[in-house]
Picture: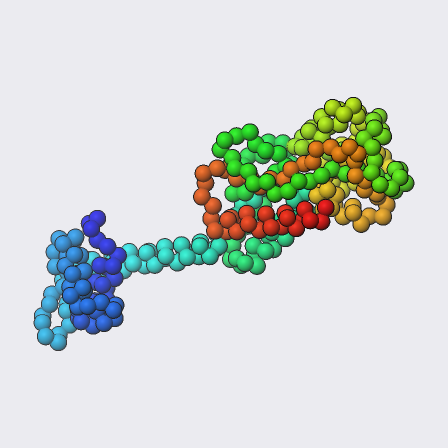
Length: 299
C-alpha cells in the first residue's frame, strides 16, 4: 500500500462523485487517459479492481473492494486537507511562541514586541516567563532575553544593544553632570542582588579601587529607585532599567553619567542552536532587533 498517492485517491473520489472517468477528468482538469492511469495505479496498489465499468453512458459502479477503498480514501484526504490547513496556518504565524524575559525588557521592549506580533498574527499564542535568576535554561523557551552570554556551544546569541550604566541619586545629592567614580568610594548605595550582570559591575568598581557601602539590595528596579529617591543611597543601574521604571522623568531623582564609565551591560536574544525557528519566532527576532535599535537611539 506504500504506492498509493493522494492524487490517485483524489481522482478516485472524483470518479465516484461524477460517475464517469470523463466527467471526473473535466472536474479535475486532467485528460481522461490521466484519470485512467491514476485509477490503474490505485488498483495495482490495492490489488484489485475498484470500479465495474458497464460502458456507454451508464455510471461506473464501485466494487466491494472499491467500497472499502472509498471509506479510507475519504478519511485520508480529509486528514491531508487538515494537514495542509494546519501547515498554512503555521506559515501564517498561527503557532505558539514562548519567550523568557527579565524585568528591564519586560517593562520596555517586550510590551511593544508582543503588541506588534499580535497585530501581525492575531491568532498566534504567546507565552511569557520572567526569570531573574543567574542561570535560566534557554532550552525551555523559544527565545530568551538575557544580559549575559552563555558559555555554551549549543546556544546562539543575537546581541541587541549596549546598555550603559548611570548613577541615579536623590536630587541635590550630587551636582548636575557626570559623577566621578572616586566620589562613590565608601558612599552608601542601593543595588540589585549579586546575580546576573550585577557581579560584573561590582567587580569593575572594585578593579577601579571603588568600594561603595551597599546598604540595601532588591531585585525590583522600582524598589531600588524608590530607596535612592528616599536618600538611602545612590544606585548604579543600566539605562534600560532606569528608562523602564520611568526614572528619567522623575523630578526627585537626577541621573548622572559616570566618569570614567564602567563597562556597559549587553542585552542578548538567546535561543538553542540548530533549532529551526517558526515563522512567528523568526518575525519576533526581526522585531526585537528593530525595537532594540529604537531604544538604543534614545540613550
